[in-house]
Image (cartoon, rainbow over all chains, first blue to last red; front, top):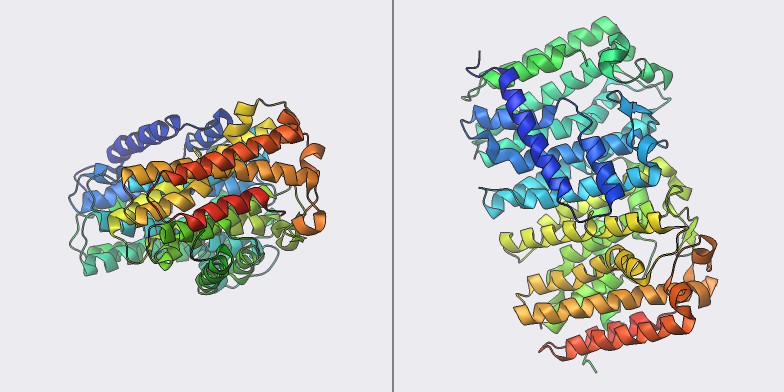
Length: 295
Length: 295
């Protein structure tokens, strides 16, 4: 068990990053409409899992989590842009996200596209302002974020996901999609903290392993929730994967098979941590939270 | 007159950046469809004015233009992403660009959005690899590019442009749009070279002035070409501004008034250079080229 509870840690640092995100967007000299659209999606709530994971990893290194504030804000901007673009009519065509109308439903498609582009671009400017890190480290952060979010990462995963619709995928193909679409930004959360904390090579390997397994666990739980979740908790329609003929872990492995796989990734993720010399309490709790969340 | 002709300089460095762009995209480990869509628009030709301007500014500092290769490639990626997104049905809804079907016409909207997102994100990774520059300089380049392309720059200009449709704008409002939508990336071309070449403050001021005036000259000439241009040279429908009820310089100032304004910006841009101690030949030729181009 960690000395700090995940609940109190999350509350504190979720608030910290939310305040910073608000400051960062409010301070922009830009047309009101696009600023409002950027804020709307940034403020639409969510669990801020990525920032919390980044802060918790810094905590595991016994560093001040606030060192990761700019990186966490940049990361959440990128995550938010990806949700805005993924929800567009030509992509997943979703009307609801976290119980609220999606960005394009409120502001129209053109502004939603621009709000996404704006968040994506701005995130790199924000990273440039990382405090307490050498220029070399800042460049490593920027390069890793761009790689994780770009064609070899999240954008590639989303492209493969679109191509995979109405097709029956293998587990390997599904794994490629999720490793990139969801996994790479989750991995960035952990690796950004490792860069900021001067992790050793063996610590980096443990954390990479951990991030890989919790990334897949996250996605499998997402698929399970799409079947078993309650709409009031999810804030979106459940059963939407099936109605879009998307391959999912339960559709390929059965629901029980998916639950087995989730459990196995959870165990592997935690054991990767166990072999490291980090103060792992919060990271273990986050792995458990990811596997058991109900929305 | 410059010792080097703009024509031979352009030919050489246009080819250099085009080869680099091709290498950068070909080397990506990403789904074929999105790579192809990225390449399609990168290869759709164009004058590569921004890269040439960057290289020519380095030349004006008597530096090796190739120092700016990664910055020029990143810049052209951002310019290309902006064209792909601007052409989308929910934005300008254009079917043709440089005489070829626009990206979404060939690959569909979802892939076009992702190709744009991919180019935008990748450009920052490319900049991180700038050779022969200190980490501090690389961060200045990244920060400036993000600011120039983001909500306070190009994205803001495009947002204001969309809001301005079907409205009658003042010359000041039109200037805001173009300063940001087109001007900021042109200014980056010049300022990126200034950063790489360790420009003095007075050189920076001269170049900022130059970039501001040629940016506006560029846009005014664009508006004039939309009326006077020949479709076969332009590679797109002419008269499209009028049919979309867009405010333009000729609609606000008359065609003759717009031509006067173009001339005045050209003179101011060149005189900003004259007061600097740079080897200005190519930059003067580029200003003339921008004001007299027929496509």
